[in-house]
Image 1 (tube, rainbow over the protein chains, first blue to last red):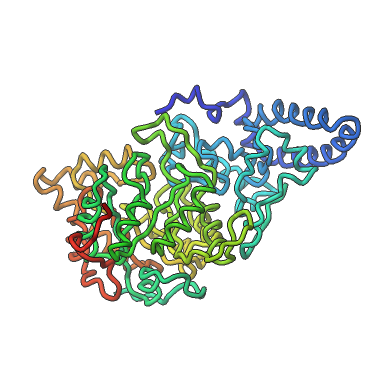
Image 2: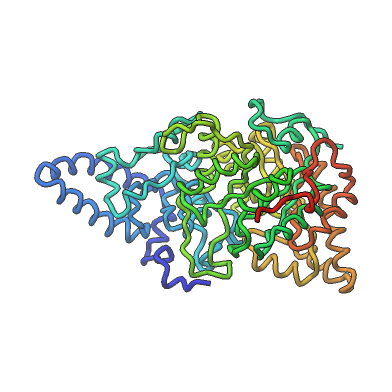
Length: 177
Length: 332
């Protein structure tokens, strides 16, 4: 068994669990942040695209890092996954829990940690706007976006850019940025 | 006999004998082949020969329990060449999307017609926990990618495939794994992603499974996907204890372990088989169950006994078949 202290996914900062257990204010915060980013990012980008990207990334490392233990995948789907970051799953699953969840709802890999997806499912029930997004078929992760700002990628439309073959399949439901 | 009507109005997907069996309304039996820790093909043939007379298709495991064994694709290569009906298991732990898509083409070229798409046990449960875990895709991505390759004739990148692989696609389900009320929804996602059949994790708790199937029927999934229930014999009380503590996602209720413990040591193997037969008899009465998937770790010979005692012999129609190992010419 790996020591959880070494695993980036196992990190939980003070109060962060309590905040995530109240996902309704977070939904509003998500909407506000989205509106803010869409307005502010293009302005800073006019001065310097590089600075704009860096500023956004720092903001995410600090804010989302503290609350969600953000792993900076660069394509945030937090609001669609019960305000629980799916990249905290050691298997990096994007579409729900694996078959290894323990009977106390804890993770197969890190026994001390509750399953990210079990928490996401629980929290999605008390959400007002995005709870049903749990049913969306999320596309594979674009690893080229790792460590980039998801906010910048959202404005640029890079985060919803899925492989051409993914879209060609029947019954597609694209993910919302 | 529980002859349910063939679900999924979708067209025939492949030349799979397993698909034909299921679509004809027969109660299907699949069994798991334990890949050898050996470079000798005879080990694979020996195990397959025991299984072939009592099942419709043989699953070749892919690094089960995150331990290294002969790979699923090479077991399938040996077996399809000998005429067996195989199910290739593909996990997301060991390979990225480029390798997996290449393997799907190669497998179809060798005559594999069934693929089971699984997430895979984590490296930490195996004997090489320091290995890098890949998980480039999850099982839902894998299903969608495989169905895109088959139905649209393109790779995930959109690049065309000259001859698309005609595969019957399987998914895994964990009816007895939390969060329980989400499991049917998760199955719905897999069906949407392209699953044609489902093989479940071990089912030792029939009541839990009954509740799960109730939700599955409410979602109408039993009419869109063929569901095969995972069962298996417990070899002893110690094996039961090991499985429920060490193997992820396996839940063995206390009363079953207690029942194993009550039996004298020499009778425990027999008790394990009896429990397995009883579970098969109970689950096949549940609406929406189309078959069983028998997983008997290192006791292949018990599978025939279980299938016979559950009244599922003879395997009519398309048995997993194949020729005796002597007839197979190994390359020099």
